[in-house]
Length: 201
Image (cartoon, one colour):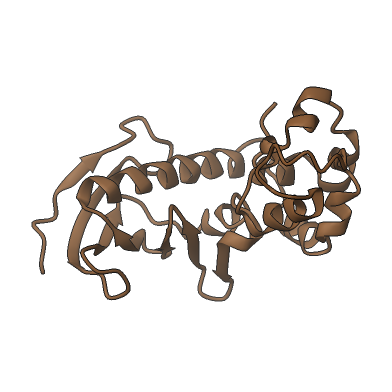
């Protein structure tokens, strides 16, 4: 079904994206009683998509580098971002649900844009290269190894696996939060990857 193209001002003072328009809504083909929507942002994303791909855990990202198309597996749905500023989203409850999810993404886009235009921008190619060489065992070796289950996982190794898949946040390790010693993880991952995996000071 076509849509009237309603526009929503999300970040009036946003650095790159400020508004989003809902261009089309159709029934979702993978989830009954849900919709898929096509949205359009007010700016192109070509310059920020490579950086944006590194703001989410690797298990949540499918990035086609040659075309600069980014698909995120977030909020129990697939969200695809195109260089033109188009966003497609499936398994959505309604328009308000779509706007809620896209608001978070727009915040990340503006943050990535600011970082890229700062005096000392992050070299995301190096971040990506570093992350590709890190496995669950390396993460596990930097954890408290208490198997306390307070994160919801049976073991610290299970936590490490789910962390890299993007199914759990680093902050959910309670002993790590309580102890406050993240020097091993800092050395292994670096600040950018720790933030990507959900660490909050």
